[in-house]
Amino acid sequence: MDINRDNTESGTTQMGKKYSRSSEIGILFLLFSLGIALRLPWFFPAVLDWDESTFILMGQSILDGYLPYVQLWDLKPPLAFGFFALAIATFGKSIVGVRLAGTLCVVATAFLIYLTAKKLWTRRTGVFAAMLCIAAMSQWPHGQATLTELVSLVPLVGALCLLVYREPTSNTLFHAGILMATSSLVRLNLGYVAVLIGFYALLAPPVHSLKNLVLRSMSYAGGGLLVVTLTWIPYLLAGQQEMWWTSVFLAPLNYADSQFSVFQNLISQTKYALGVYGIDQEGYVIWGRLKFLVRGVCLLVWLGGVAGFAVILRQWRNAVVSTRRASGLVMLFLVGTGFSILKSGSANPDYMLQLIPFSALLAAVFFEKAMFSRLRWPVLLTVAVGVAVSVRDFVPGYQEVFSRALEKKELRYGAAYEIAEYLKRENKHHRPVYMLTDHIAYWFMGSYPLTRSTTHPSNIARLYLLETIVGKGATVEDELRRVLQKEPEFIVTRDYVWYLQESKNAKDLLEETLASEYILVKEIEGRKIYRKKRPEFS
Image 1 (cartoon, rainbow, N blue to C red):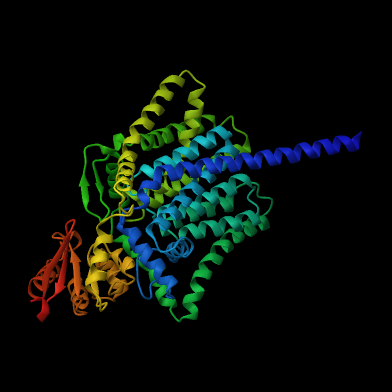
Image 2 (image 1 turned 60 degrees about the horizontal axis):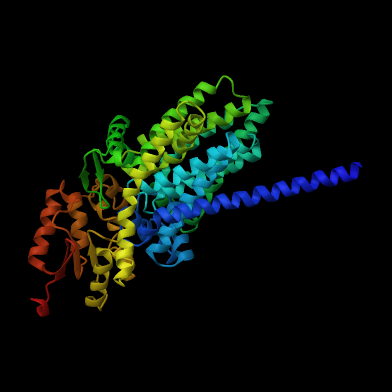
């Protein structure tokens, strides 16, 4: 009898595991399908955000055998570029492959949010939180591009999920340290979150003894230092330790100190959220009229997140210890990530992508609770209206794809593709090209920017970065002159280059050089292509 009972229980357990596993696979497939559906039309434009173009160039440089910062330079930690190198190596040299890799990051983040919410509350809460996460991240400005915010969220939310599921033992904290360091070496601002979670590792109960406390702290720090050391070793072997230290730590700190204060950043991010103004794909400010109000899903996430925060605080006293600990972790990640955004210096709307998963999780808590209260029908109506309004943002992308398909045109499109094709055709001797805009065209042509300071076109106008890239005493005018002395065969620019406006000397130098030494040969969607004057073109 006992043997049969044991066999029956074992069989039931195995069946339960199989059911659970297949159920989780089904939910993962659902999230992947939703991610593809909401992001597919934006796989094809050449440029959604010019930072993405820079990351692609940096990733390609790694594949071509260069360490980050040696051949090209940009203000991000090395693992950010490592991800883009991996995406290109895996999916091929195409924008579609890079955008697919970004979609996988969004889906992975949402699935981890699902697992976290399921552990803390219910499976239904998890599914709703994950779907909100994907929809809001796909609708938020620049969220369709593959940006470092999306990449960094996978290990960041992974660390939250790990700490929710497991007790804070030394082994758990070691792996959490690895995940937090990985996210920080994709986006350095998340280092603030890593420090905050470090205090959690130090103080979280149960602390059995001082020895246990020290061991846990060392385990967390050891996991983080392992990742940092692994990124440093290649530079040590190449004799470039100073470049690693300066580029990974000093330059970002200099950048943050040279930008907005915490209060100024808060005001700017609030304006982005309200749609008072935004930033286009190349950094130009776009003024709007409360455009955010038509981003229904995002509104559900932000307002629902605030309401969910209140729900958790209200339930705090009656919650069991384990639930309090896990809920507190969610709050720590939310607050820490928010603070890290405000301390990052610059105020860009895409930074808010880092908050969406945590806010979506809290919003799902509120919405599920509201579904079983007197607020059920008003909440259902609000969610339905939010989703319906959001559809407007996704329609144009599909219209473009279907239109191009019906006309039998290539699905990929954008000025950068046309510029690259023109330059490949006209620049048969592969002479230097200087792109002040649409610099992803370098990648399409199989070439690189002329200098490290022009990897991202606007870096040439940022003195606090030029001192890192070139050296102390560097000026915008001198660096632009150095670029022009390479005698690029073609210069691609716009009539108004916003990042040169604060340096009159540099602006005048470019205009004088174009007027005296170059001739306008082509104009593509507002981009002007100039060619070096030679006897055959005079």
